[in-house]
Image 1 (cartoon, rainbow, N blue to C red):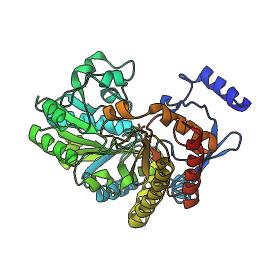
Image 2 (spheres, rainbow, N blue to C red; image 1 turned 120 degrees about the vertical axis):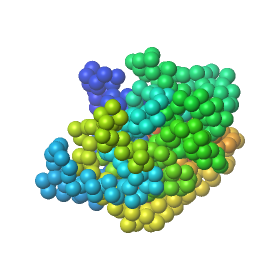
Image 3 (cartoon, protein in one colour; image 1 turned 30 degrees about the vertical axis):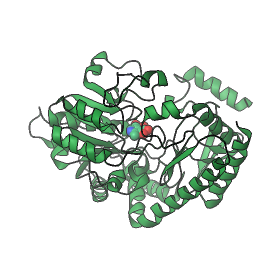
Image 4 (cartoon, rainbow, N blue to C red; image 1 turned 90 degrees about the horizontal axis):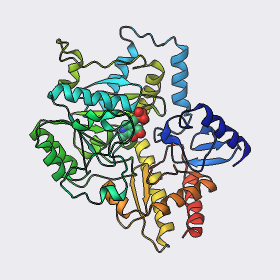
Length: 439
Ligand SMILES: Cc1ncc(COP(=O)(O)O)c(C=O)c1O
């Protein structure tokens, strides 16, 4: 390890609990990144990397986008500040902008993170239904709070005995979740409508929450009819359907993935690309549910509160981001699709020459390479069929060559508008070099 990296890692271990801020950022190989610009990251030795990690996906316009940063600087200099009392004009502006774009949002509240937005969506669903149980997806990620800290990426030994149509046993992903929460969480397989029906038929489920495409485990898409089926089941059993669009959100379409799928959830959450890397979350949905925030009875009122909610800096970033997406919608999503298709085609050519199976799955600018012979439909499918060792070796070898994809299996790659054809072609070239040296 270079000396500056060793020193940094030692300092971190001494003073930072767990060694890194946000424990999901720990990586092997260790890296000390000091700067990011456009489509690139730079480490402490000045080495440049083409970045497809994009800070876990927010950077739709690339790092340090001038237009968005200028809007932020203007907001800071204009006297817009965290007043924290009453209402401020930028609140209505961003709320109108978002509700005008996303079909499933009639009213909303802003938070600082996606996790908070999810926490409030669940609270609203419970208040609306008078029920407590939450259903999560095996392999789905919905942030860091207790109710969704279950069944993340369990090993083959855990998922193998599972049968379609059944609930999973619970597998908690962090210490410290009160045992009592186990009684009000259930986990089922994504793309398994029979399991959804069985669990919802018990009549006690407040909400079913899912990423409409499972993007914590690459790109696992809904089978035809799956989201429609969930919509119908939620209507039948009086359960709130929550789409967690924190990752899919504005990356795939201005109206979220819901606008592409044609399935409108009751509530939905956004984050990440909404503000191109500035910290903002959105929880929104049907007026009937969201208006619980203003219920005249304190017993029925849902409280959403946060010192930094609607912070003018984040709102300025989101306004700049969404205005640009709205005014140049076709151009932006067309370009992301074009870049994505170019990368997909190039990588397919690279892997076509190998004697092992690969499947590239892509939704616009988000992609994943699976070392298996079909596009996965669930985490179970991934863990039982994907060659995890080949995946991690591929990622690490690419990092050494100057292409950064997160070195954890299945993590999605994210292309931004800062990537150029030359970046994509260079990535394909380096992938060719890398795979020819790997078994
Ligand atoms: C689908 C999804 N939901 C929620 C979250 C949590 O968002 P945040 O990290 O901003 O709290 C994430 C973060 O990766 C996510 O991918």
